Image 1 (cartoon, rainbow, N blue to C red):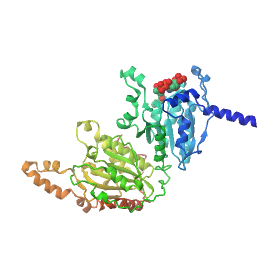
Image 2: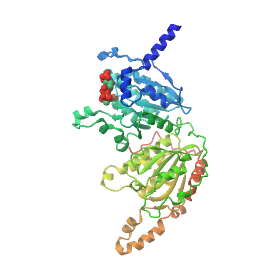
Image 3: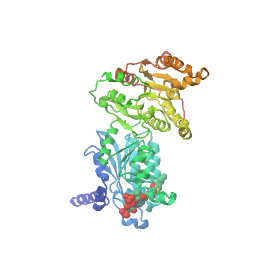
Image 4: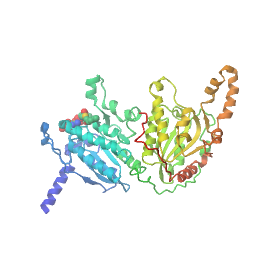
Length: 508
Ligand code: HXC
């Protein structure tokens, strides 16, 4: 028996060594942790149960039979994050660049199948060069099986991808199919094809950072939802995000013990909206002031900052916040903001996370850039997402709610449940200047100031909408947290009967 135990330990040690000391040192020298070190930070201490550490690839082409490393370049298993179950896989760059072979893919599929069956999220830590080139179609088939499971698991369990090294091919496509993608600044890259192939095909000379670094993907492509300065900070932030997420689409929203009184009044909110309609203010202040302990996890902060999306809590339970940000482009809805918010709304709806929407929107962004870029279709995505969502939806209009953007931003007409307005709300087809210049054009420029006053007196308040029941109540800003808490309590058991359909056809 002693011999067998010794043999077991020897085999375990071989698997734990991955690609060997030199490659581990190279990984560290690049400022990256190893797959196992990452899992240790992500999961609660001592909670990781590993599967398949003795799996080896079956290929022999290109002498690969001389390079069989137990585990085959991916560490898989499950553990807990603050006591809640999570399935995890971490690609090991020290083994053939973390590349995905047939058996490597099978290990990941096993984890994904368990996650769907047992109802817990999947977190993938990526550091990999894509399909293992030596395995040809077997590796492609492996990726196909992963992609299929990404799609089947979508809306069943949350899926989070963390990009922690150079990632290419299938190792960026699979993340793109998941709910959230996060990156590490300076050490992680995402591209379908790397700089060398790019140079050959398009004659562009680009660095990995320029082609697919975290700055590109968090600010321009919107492939990634956030980036952090190093592996440790990144994994700690994933733990923080995890605490907001339900385990699956039938599980309750997590609720944590909280000391923050839901009745807490915030008198400073009474003066948050400036007297001048064109002066910006920070909508983040409102989100933080209504959230428990001001704790807010922002999603896609650097992309389309004119809309804020993220998770907070009220009475200990997760809330998805969407809010126009007057500090960026006056909070206008453009194509990027619409796409960003639509995706977030759909995530919340999949996983029964109640939504709070704060509205201060001057309308949709005009101009050829937006029109030619398809704002009609992108704006429609947000409208569609809000209208189809059946989770509890509570809306507060703080200032402007103009035109189509009024309708889109979780208005009563998009099936929002409770719609509040602050006394400073202005709900109209458009701002006074534009409106008066159209409807009183014939009266000439001298008539404009008087007509503007008339328009402002009539429309720039919440009471016209309230008199029609589109606004349920005009509330005092300082009481917003308590009014939201009450509305969310009231909606706790919301049920919506749906007309049968296979699925809808959101404008993509
Ligand atoms: C087999 C691979 C590999 C791969 C890297 N390696 N990628 N082995 N298959 N896909 C190996 C290297 O040979 C090397 O082994 C070790 O991993 C480290 O790689 P380096 O190139 O030395 O590292 P680095 O300079 O950091 O560059 C990392 C990289 C680059 C950017 C990921 O390796 C690269 O471009 N790899 C190929 C990317 C790619 O085109 N993949 C196929 C995608 S197609 P040694 O032993 O020399 O240290 C795909 C299809 C899926 O995925 C379907 C999509 C829809």
